Amino acid sequence: MGEFKIIEAGPCTTVQDRGRYGYQRYGMPVAGAMDDFSYKMANLLVGNEAGAAVLEYTFQGPAIKFFDGAIIAVTGARAAVYLNGCLLPDWQSFFVPGGSVLSFARVEQGARSYIAFQGGLQVEEKLKSRSTYLRGEFGGYQGRKLKKDDCLEFYGQPQKTDYTCRYLPEKFIPDYPSKVEGRIILGPQVECFSEEGAKNFLKGRYKVTEQADRMGYRLEGPEIKHKDGADIISDGVAAGSIQVPGHQQPIILLADCQTTGGYPKIATVISVDLAKIAQLKPGDIISFREIELAEAHRLLEEREKLFQQIRTRKMKFGPSKFLNLKINEDNYRVMIEEIRD
Image (tube, rainbow, N blue to C red; front, side, top):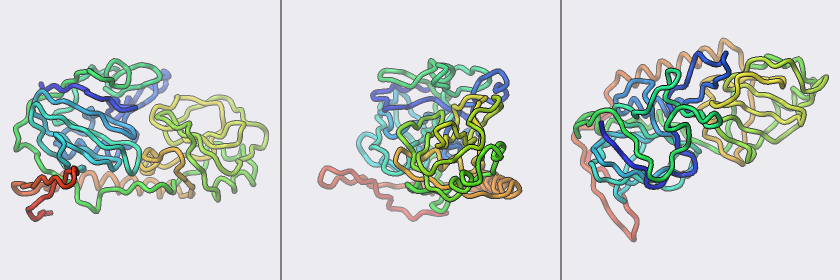
């Protein structure tokens, strides 16, 4: 086992994994990583199984003191990563010696990042998952956000050469623009909305409001009018469901969403687009485009093939050599060896 301590926690740093599946019928949300693409890539880079537990942070990363050596990778929202004050690359694995301090600048693009530890985080499994469900104070580390002086463990004590400097080729690294298009499947209750309301939804641009968290994003934009009121008999919801309550503004449900809801759902965001929506922040803009279910299935299959391709390919430099430079109080980490793809 290896151990680390939280020196500064950031506004929302939690333990997450792939989610808690099979318990929605009992009222338990899935939870899990908001951006499953970045989450899966972080684990691939350090050689973990696909469902290993990681840290997810929002807007500002934690500061972490390592008591033992570790191999880690940071993916997701773009923010400067520092080890003992020296700049390090993201979307790449690297060795952290015991006694080191890992820290982050505030996120510049996107909203959420992931820190994977080789071997995965060692927290108690609850209902077959280590994910934190914040509103239920369940799972993860004591069912809550991490805070200063929390100490966590990760499995194993890796050697410096194990999985060091595996990287994701630049062409696979996503951008996180402030304006995105979410592809959707209309329904299951699109008939509850007026023709004008449905048109407004598909043609409109919606702003993410301040009411945006792991449970869902409230949006602000053109009104989506109902035909006969905003109440239905409660039925099942899932991450990606877009509810429209009586105020005629949409809500995108996300990882920590409830399991049932009594508002009609005009559409569902396709699975592969949930990752980029999870990276939106208040003030960002989203529009929607309808596609067919068969196209959504094809896109999901393509992404799974990409994961398999990256899992089986060699994502490694030769013996890496970096030069740490400090210019006018700014730290730079420069690689002085040609990358071999």
